[in-house]
Image (tube, rainbow, N blue to C red):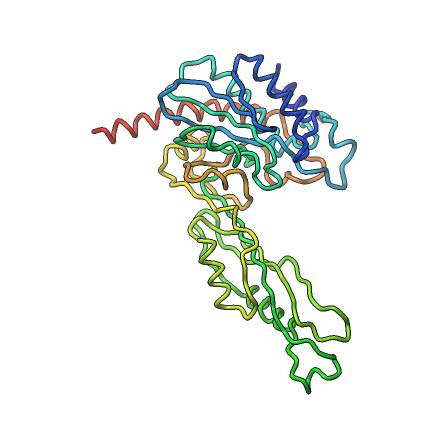
Length: 359
């Protein structure tokens, strides 16, 4: 099966988050016919190849897509080639990465390797990481990982996390006409003061991720138009860097705000890998890039614990979740070639590191 045919087959099999079953069935059958022993839990698939007992490298990408947005030209679930571009839901995010990883695996499985490759194609990445997080303990020890996401083959060695804070401003209710005489405290006014503080906050810039600003994304308060509100809630979304601790950040917000501050979600942890690590150097060598970059979007990397990792794959992050997303055949072929070069390069560098350490 050619790269174009495989990508068309995957894109033409709908797999919105939570409904990945048909695609998981298809990929499981396809991989099995190539001679691999596929393991499965739910809609998550994984298989291994290479030399057992050596370094172990994870290649991970996700099978699921977001639902189609408005604005699509034609049926988003029907892949259509426009010249060298395949348009269809998931072509860019991230079935192009899945296809490229499979093509590299099919090629490298026929060659001797100095380590073992674990390929994990997982579900529900778009809705909270319930795929890779549920099977990670079954994959065994890992010396490195590559998360397949559309980065234009730029090697991301740092990824922002996501901290969501729920803030509650408390006031004292009363009739609006009597508010000044009663001294009733308006919770919305208190929240407004805090929101202004949030907008003015500055955070240290990260060398790969740059600067960041906290964003207030939702606000609600008040019961009636003639009643001073006694409560107002608002949410803060802060995309964090690898050098920031979520609990410490929450405490810092509480010290600066009048409102009560509580963590709503902190499970998307920020990630960073030392640029000198073998996985970064191997990826840079395979991609022919001078240095790594950072990524502002989250991915399954957030759930890989302390495994040294990079995020990299064919496609463009700015096409993700957009109508008429596409991938070009040139991007797909370059992605497959990249993964096929990265794997042996990583094993070689790991072996060199162990040899140096042994001395």
